[in-house]
Length: 106
Length: 106
DNA sequence: ATTATGCGTATCCGAAAGGTTACGCGTAAT
DNA sequence: ATTACGCGTAACCTTTCGGATACGCATAAT
Image (tube, rainbow over all chains, first blue to last red; front, side, top):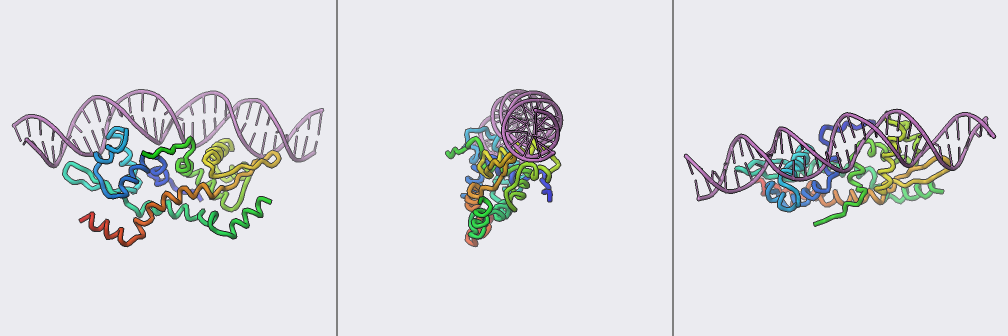
């Protein structure tokens, strides 16, 4: 019934537009903090904080390399979002459902 | 780069577990505030506030009926989330992508 | 006409979010 | 050995969030 919101929730993590933008950048491949931060008008520590949240939510993984830290998307976790939205997908795809809505509105 | 931060964002709206639970209830059909509020340990005004946020984000629609207000899921808006996640779906489905990840990690 | 219901809104409050600057620690470069 | 660099974290501040309670307005019921 009630969902356990872990201390780091995926939905919360992707709620912020900056974090979604970070993910978009990572879609084309892993990247260190500096190169990510260069894409935004925010300070580097701010991006680091966003990365920490994404990391806590297991949406990205971290790999140290020298003095850099390479971040990479961890797609498996995003699947949770896909599963959730999947529960509603039929509502705009399923024709039977449209009939149902139609009848409800009468 | 990309701005769209409407005053009411879908991702922000679904970030809260209570609001996702409300949507889950509405999945089985439209409902008035009172019956929704009965399902939670929170006050009725709190649920009203959540509904307002969902409504502002166009995830639910409102229909007045006497002194009640009936809320109903508006699936089309959730499609935005589906489209977003769609951009990442290939990362856990596509075999070529797995190869890419494999090579990157070497 | 009066009373009871359903619901939104206003106000208030503590906690969390999201940003900044200052700093320190390892690693790389000179 | 020094200096420069990349990055995380701490401290701080302001804004937003998510609750609660108090209230008022329509509509329904009596």
